[in-house]
Every structure is written in structure tokens, then in C-alpha cells.
Length: 355
Image 1 (cartoon, helix red, strand yellow):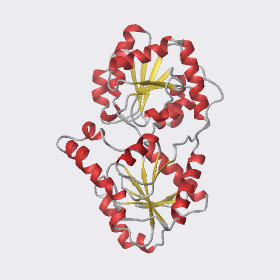
Image 2 (image 1 turned 30 degrees about the horizontal axis):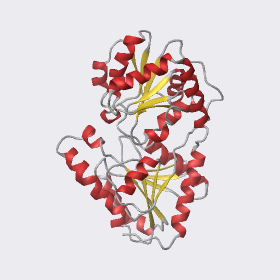
Image 3 (image 1 turned 90 degrees about the vertical axis):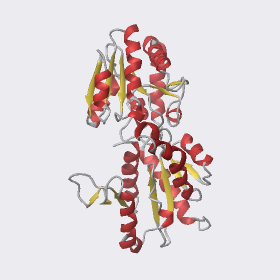
Image 4 (image 1 turned 180 degrees about the vertical axis):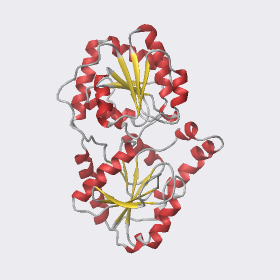
């Protein structure tokens, strides 16, 4: 699961524990149940990657509109459900937007869809929500939305579903850089591999551990040289064990909502190096919990920054200690409580206007 899916799951089950009734409507996948209850959350699945949107409208018309919901949370991942256009039974609507697609269009979709999506579709879709109370996870996305004309955007930060370590753990006996995340083009794991080739020339005994799966894996394996290890998709326990052993995490993504993998690594005493892009400039405090490379997309600068951390033991120790301490500010309990407060504000404010 990505950060958005983890956010949804962790918050939803906590809302149930607080006494709310929660229904999650989502798309189907192979072998899934069309309806079930998990952690108290009623889950209904219908449609696929593209049809889920009109299926949601169909389910609303046939059943949801008669079930007496108070609030509809319209979670937007590039394409929205457009609930302001069809929800008409007195429900309040809250938009949940982790990040805008923006550059993702050019990495993940072919031309001319990428051009149309970036310049036309996303802005046109989101204009339907400018007067809808909106929740996001970072100041970067909040600013993106305000620039689009959104009137009411609140920040509810990500959380952690494990307790941060009490101290910096024992690290691997040689320099280890970790990449942890989905292997897709917009995450730019190829930049981690290219930068590592430069690092390897300076530090021959170093390794790059790539943790995760995705459609880009075969291409990455072809370009990877000696010292790059692919671990694939791992259990939470195994992934955290590796991240705790790594000297530094690298996240070369084109943008993030917040960067949940950064927070998880911090809680294991591992700082992060990333480009100075939306989301990652929110999850990393530059020169304190990690380092931001100002030249976005510059692999040489990324490599230089990695080498700086690997060679400077004092810097690395300071970053690790600060990162670990910083991570203790986050938990899914806090996230759910703040999210619930936002829902209560929306529910009690009868003056909010919807389009």
C-alpha cells in the first residue's frame, strides 16, 4: 500500500473506534470480496481502475443516498469522484487530497494524455472542489490547492503505526544506501541507481538496497551494476529491519504527498536525502533530519550529497539522532484525532456553501 492507502486504512478504523459508522467504497481486485467488514469498517468494492468512478455514482443513487450518511469524504488521487455534482441528500462533503499529480502525468502516461492531463484535466477536475472543505497532508499540497483557488484547506499530517526506536540502532558495517518505495518512473528509482554508480567510485565497499516492487523493476535491474541489491516487496517487519541497518535513505521522487517512507526511516534512526520537491521538503527538515538537494533531477548533486553523509560520521550521527527524535511527533492516533476534529467542524458549520 502507498501512503494514501495507509492513511485511509489507519484513520478509518480509528474513526470506527471513536463511535462513527464508516463505509469505504473502492475498486475491485482479483480475488476480493465485493463486501466485507474489516476493523469495523464496511468495505464495498465495485468497478476497476477507471470504472470505479461511475460505479460510485451508481451505488450512491441506488443505496448510499438512502442510508443516511452525514459526511462524504471524496478522496482524490488524480481523478476525483466528482461527488459535488451528484451527492444531493444533504450530506456534507470533504475532499481528501494527498498530492496533485502534476509532473506524474509526464512520467506515468503517454503523450498526448500527459499533456492534456497536466495542462487541462487536473485543473478542470479540481475546480469542482474550490469551495469544498479540503484536507491534505502537507503545506506543499496546501499551497498547490490555494493556488488553484481552494478556499478552505487544512493540514492533517501522516502518522506512524509503530513506536519509534529508543536509540539509534546498530548500522551495517559498510555504507548502505536504501531506496524504499514503489518501483515506478515518477518515483525515479533510476536516479538512485545512477547516483550510486558515482558513489561506488568513491566508496567501493558501499551498497544500494532497493526495497519494493513495481512495473519499473526489470528496467532497473538491467541498469543496475555491482553492489545494487533488489529485495522486492517485503513484510513490514523485514522492511523495517533493513531500513534500520541502512546508513541513509534516498528518495528521488518527482513529488510526494508527504513521504511516509521518510517518516518510517526516521523512526528507525535513518535520515533521508531527497530532491527539494513538494512533499519531501515537508517531511525532511533540511540539514537537521536529512538533506535536500536543491537542483531537482541533478544526479551528480544527489550523489555528492549522499557521499557527504556517508563520509561525515558526525553529520550522519546528528542527522540520525534528529530524525529519530522528530519522528516521535507522529502517530496515527494523532492523525485520526485531528482528522475527526476537521470532520466535526464541517458537520457543525451550516454556513459552508457547496457547488
